[in-house]
Image 1 (cartoon, rainbow, N blue to C red):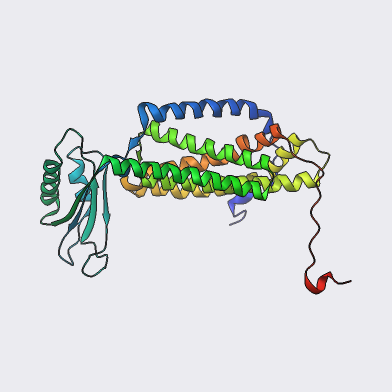
Image 2: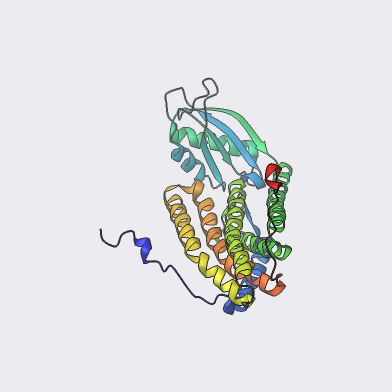
Length: 325
């Protein structure tokens, strides 16, 4: 077909003045971040089983008989216990995933008896899925869940610190502060989305936020690499114009990469079921915000901080026989 691929319709060169609107978007980002932080305390995060506590059990049928995970999830959902997670696992006797064994996790309200709730769950599953065997029934207390929650937050904080050290090592300190500001901005706004949409905050959500951190950092490094190249190439050009030029030169790559990722995640959110919906939505929103922060958070901070101009590249070090005249 003539004119294909359609990616040719995208402009190869743009001349948007991003820095011009940086103050307005900076105020908007600050307001949204403050609102997201307040929302994390009130009404607070909707904790999942991993961080709130609950019960887990193994549900199995004889080899060759498949357990319908949707039937199990639907039966437990009808009891009004909150977050329910069902996942197929391998049989213990054969170590093969044949669909006959699943692990079930569900919340237990604080005002209800744990033993009675477990009995109700077993009765509901038996009625919906037929005769099954229950084993390894365990209840996770709030103390263990609290420790797991702190471990998840520590993982997020450690990722941000390591990213800052990487950027500081690769670029100059001001680049590191700009990148970290973008990462913190993205993480806070993803938490805000979780609060607004009342998504379950679980280990899957921690994984989504860590993925957002990696994507945002990758996008920021691309912009910073081009900015550093242009600072060496255009030594007399005003910093404001160099930043605009660098963002415009990487804009097509950023947009195409972001749209591709969002399309895949949209399909996952629609057809992945309830178990992957929150993960997909958080990751999709994080990619969009990560692209935004690379333009209107990280780069403008470099403009405020300033950079050294006129720095020349270091001379290559000659090793071995190459160092002889």
